[in-house]
Image (cartoon, rainbow, N blue to C red; front, side):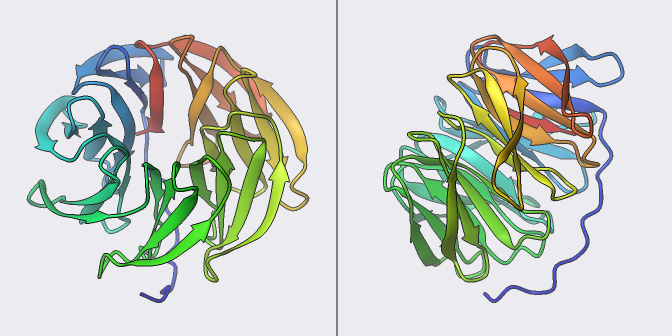
Length: 305
């Protein structure tokens, strides 16, 4: 499917930060007004990654140990439905039009398609070995999935569900992010300091650079100026200038920073600290950690909503 015209991104309203807590099998719901956990939502075993529908009504979170996906109603903050799936669901991404969601099944080496109208799993396809994290551009023209153990990224056509391209990378590609204009993909290596820059249209690596170590999460700031990359064994987040691909700052978080998320308006970032059972809240413009918020046990996925 050729890339279409990219619609403008609109900042979705948000009140909360949600964390998927591997060790306590729940979601922590942090109210941004008070910077405290308002409630916890019990989900499946070992929740991993979460995404939210464009209308802000539903949150999907993958549960690795129970091999299912919890669909959470964000008005009532309760589980609406649990969808059975393949072995080891990890990453999840909701399509920009809100009709489908895609789940990367790490142990089954597959990608499952969820119909968000009927809340059913409608199809599963084979993909690379140990798929972990998935992203989609605003025009919905492709799904990019990191495959940690086959050392590549799969580019999937969401209409045909064919793997159109496979881009070979380094030993442990894990985190993946799109630039705000959807022209670049950034892939972070867990096994080395490397980050790869891919041309999203040409489907090829254009540059690599080194920063930090043990990367899990990577995100672009909404203004397109910088990349944030977690360094899980250094308890830091590196800030990288997107033009020079050089580190221009570093944030000290708590123990084992893992995933991170940008708020829809770009003002804030949130970093999950797995070994500290906390989330670090960051002022993006000031490049300053505002504080650390206690959450459930071993938080991984984090998202504003």
